Length: 214
Image (tube, rainbow, N blue to C red; front, top):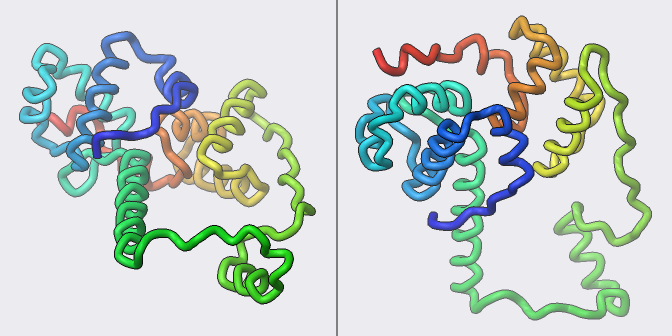
């Protein structure tokens, strides 16, 4: 894929702690990931050469260790994988719609056609036919988490269209304990790595940076 949406606020939130060199290397690696639609191999020399990062090999290793997950001989980026997967799903859907002669004509008067209204509601229960839906109540800042970080986390989840519920917070607390981390550390890790969720095994089984170059 040669195009992806770039959210400036998300990028700044995830990279504000990086140096200019580290941010540039991360940006080039992300663009390579999207353009090739491939994970970065353990033997990174071919990628480094293609991206002309020969003088920045150490920085490449640091960025991969912080923002990518190493498994099955490749460096994976969860957010990139999600975007690429959704891109292909949409492309497949558009292809199927095209074979059927394009999108159906828009129906402007559902209220006057109860049969159509009922069909839409039954086939897609996520479609709301009333305006009575209320947003989820905000959850107070958990103990041990700074108000600034919690605000950043709420904003981060909102951009991912993933609401913060009591169930989400309970799961985060459990997984952070399993990973021997504080809840604040777990939240920071999620934001910096671009993760949608947090699993203790992603930390306990994470490959150390130096192992990628041995």
